[in-house]
Image 1 (tube, one colour):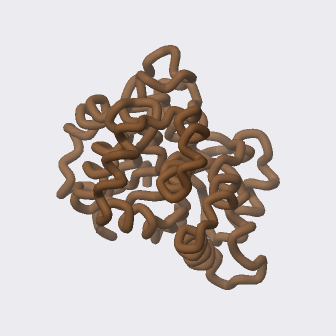
Image 2 (cartoon, helix red, strand yellow; image 1 turned 60 degrees about the vertical axis):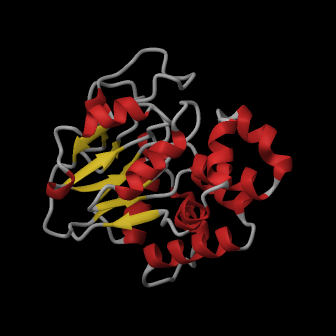
Length: 238
């Protein structure tokens, strides 16, 4: 996948139809597709979107806070009502409960991805991920992903939910953005999580931070106005 151009997919939130249409111009064999998480909840086809992303060739699927919430509800039935209040669809939970391979695959997802060109991809635009690794770790991206795997294996969803639900501080706090890029040895960071309201992925601070959540899902209560699919699904500029 290293030689392929990168296609970024922001928050899908169960709108499989719009996702399918958005990906039509981008054949899987010709793109490294990176999903930034939150494929589930709000829309009716969250598990279908997960399976589609999993099975699309040359794809990387990162963990979003809504995947964490769904896994938490699956493990602990006490959390089901909370998760449904976040937009969870009970039929999706039933489907996931009956699909052990999909559960295992979800628990193996990374939270951050560093590309060879120095681009960092993650779900939310926050440096909260730093709490998942030591400040002096020479390989913080690897350290973060190891800790994510450990937490998912040891009922640590609460901590992961807090980390992956952080506000998009990179939009308004350039000093924290620069410290995060320095810590991860990256030149820019790409994220989703909070709808940006623009007609294309929104860039901040000269392109050092880019938000790809264009409000794709027509079922999300915050997406009152349907944005172009290109605000969420678009090639990553080199």
